[in-house]
Image (cartoon, rainbow, N blue to C red; front, side):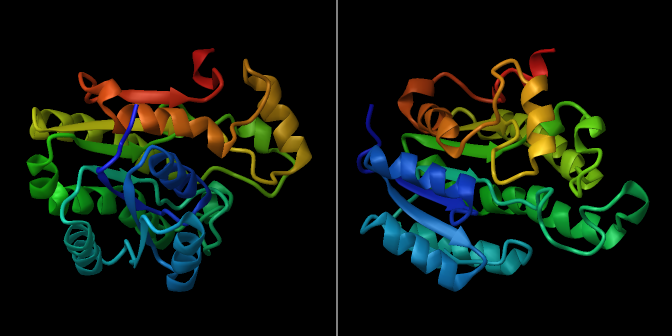
Length: 256
C-alpha cells in the first residue's frame, strides 16, 4: 500500500490525533498540509515531520480564514486527494462554560464548539469539493467519537474534575450525519468516511482511567498509534468501495 504522490490536508494537525494522522500519511509517501490555529506550534510540528509537510496556520472558527487556507493548500500542493478533519473542542479544552457540570455549560461554549467541531468540516469539504473531485482518489475522513454514537457513562467521571460536555457529543453525532450526507452527495468521485475513536490515554486521573479500562473489552484506553491503521485504510485504495462508513476504533466500548 502506498500514498506516494497524493496530497493531503489535515486540520488540527498539530494536535495529538492530527499528528498521528499526518505521520501515517507521510509514512505512506503522501505530501501533507497541516492546519492548526497556533502558527508557532504548527510550524514546529511541520519542521519535525519533514520536507513533505506544509504549515498552514488557520482559525477554523473563522469561515473566511478556513476557506482561504483550503485554497492555499490546494495551491501549494497543486491539488488535493485526501482531506482529514480532526480538530475539535474536547473534554479537556479550557474554556469557561465548557467542561463543567451540565448546569454550568453555556450557550457561548456550545456555539464555539459546534463552530469548530461541526461547521468547519462542512466549510472545508465545501471549499475543497472541486479539487477532490478532480483527483482520481478523492477521500474525506472526518473524526467522530463514541460519544457521537452513545451517551457518556457519567459514573466514570465521578470524583474527578473531568466531564463530557453535552455539545461535544451533539457535535460528533452531527459529524456522523454530515458524513452520510456528503457520501451520497459527492460520490462517485469522492469517498467520505468517519473514524470514531474511544477514549485516548492522555494523562487522565488514575481513577478515571481505571474505570474506563474496566468498562472496555480490551481493558485499555486507546493510543494515537491505534488510529494510524484506520487512517491509512480510509485514505488509500484499500477502501476504494467504502463510503458513508463509520469506522469505530474503541477497544470494544460500544459493543456492550
